[in-house]
Image (cartoon, rainbow, N blue to C red; front, side, top):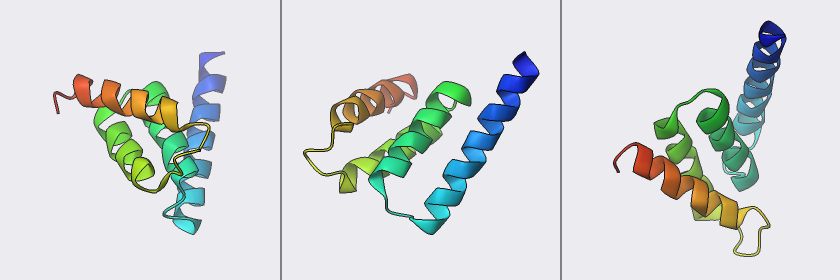
Length: 81
């Protein structure tokens, strides 16, 4: 079961990276990639970098913006930034 989940996580990460290559400034893709780095890859520094990029272009009315801010603050705290 764990191997299957790991394959799914790897596939999802690759798909997000591909989407980011095609749409490098899309705040929602950056947000989702940040979530992937934070939750699945346990890399808060990379997550924070993606969250920061997302925050600079995310519309103020984006439904994910509040969570984006919370996630960014948590990752910055984890990395002592």
